[in-house]
Image (cartoon, rainbow, N blue to C red; front, side, top):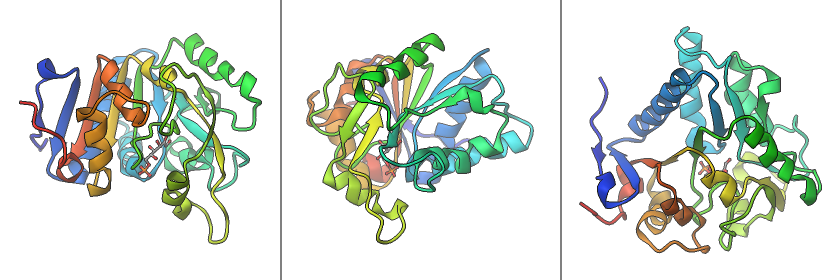
Length: 257
Ligand code: F6R
């Protein structure tokens, strides 16, 4: 049975916020939205995210594929970001994460999925935006949120007009992601990431935030001013954003209805 979330009214804010009682319900809803997008489009173009928040979402997509209910054959995808200095087969790279969680298990050809080239010179990273544009543009962009309000790896101070570029990772981001690296291996200091303008160029954005650790960032992003200090607040400038979260992540959002 589909759980009934509480939804805040779109009329009061351009951002639709869907709150579930549990993390599991929020994850499943996000996966269902992606599935509906894929099945509704002839040539779906997905913007994909990595991180712990997305693991269950990709599990659902895999399961539906394995059950013969969902095909990725017509999909093209562009991931948000990749660490600089890691080869695609390094187990801690986002390329490996994506293969492990989704790509190796579904009918998507390697030619159809993309991650920014982390070691490309800064000047040629705009090619990623061009490739997105040539594919018809991002139809649905999946996002997580960092505890410091980052989206992709657009850290506090991010430029609203940025395209794909190289960023220095915030020390708090490197600390948060240290668990994805073997003991004694440092988290890279830099990454390539879609920019804020790249992300805002998507037709629709789906942000999934779960757990109490995300409540402060989510409240700043959705209820605070639009400011570079909280890059996720730029999402308020987009007219088709859905935030999916559980009660804990939603705890500090101001009631707007
Ligand atoms: C991942 C990404 C990041 C994560 C964010 C949350 O591709 O771009 O913005 O979405 O750091 O990560 P988790 O889900 O691990 O808390």
